[in-house]
Each structure stands twice: as structure tokens, then as C-alpha cells.
Image (cartoon, rainbow, N blue to C red):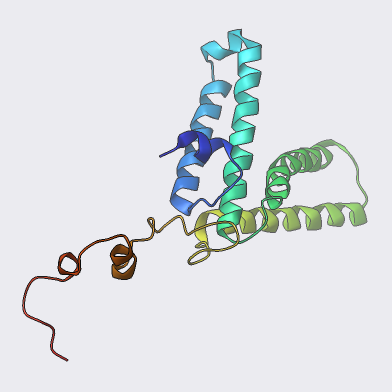
Length: 174
């Protein structure tokens, strides 16, 4: 398996299992960087790790969207929803605990919170639970299937004798 292509390239398709494995690995690395780690002594190394993790996340998300027959540019929107939600919920909780807000603005904030939650839920369903396009699509072959097996006709074209292509045993009756 070509891990550099899997993690850093935006071309091709990625099935649910590999996408989940990459996301769990990124979460593990993020937790290791966030908790007390030796990386905190070297902020440049920590920044380089964060940039690499963002790139890997964007590349694998784009490939997972390709498997769903969607353009990879949707990955930008997917990756912006989470930070946007953190900022929004931070503002929402800050307003809730200390600022007097009129009822109309409060209802607007609640409706936005609900819409953002529905959007995040759909992103999770789309990326982790919905099966990709069956067979090839405009972004490449199906990642759940192996490489296509050569048929008897294509083997005969490459000089394979007919007696090697026939099965042993009694002849099939029609």
C-alpha cells in the first residue's frame, strides 16, 4: 500500500474503513500533541505536525467525498464547519452566561445552533456511514474491489494456450 499517496494526494477514492482508520490515527496524534508531550518544548515541530495533520485530513476527506461521487472541494466546507461550530458555540455560551440578549436574537441563535448541529450530523453520516458509489465513477475505480481480473479472452490474446484456460473435470452439459 502506498501510504504517501493515501495520506497526501487528493486524487482517487477512499472507502469508509480506511477513512475511519486515518481519522482515528489523526485523533490519536492530536491527543498526543494536546496532552503533555515532549513536542511542547519545540513549537516549530508542533506547528509542522499540525499543518501535516490538516493536509492529511483535507486529502483523505476529499478522497472520501470522491468515493461518494462528490467534488473534493466540498472538503473545504466540511473542514470549516467544525471550527465554525466551536466559535459559534463559544459565543452562544458566552452570551448565555453573561450578556442580556433580546428574545428575537436569542431565538435566532438557537435556530443557528440547531441548523449547525443538523449539518454536522449529516457530515458524519455522509463520510462515515453511507456507502460509496458502486463501481467506477468519474474519480476512479471502486476502492472496495481489487484490481480487475483478466478474462479468458484477454489471456488468450497474450498467448495463453486454450488447454490452460479450461477447467479440469467432466465437460459441462447444457
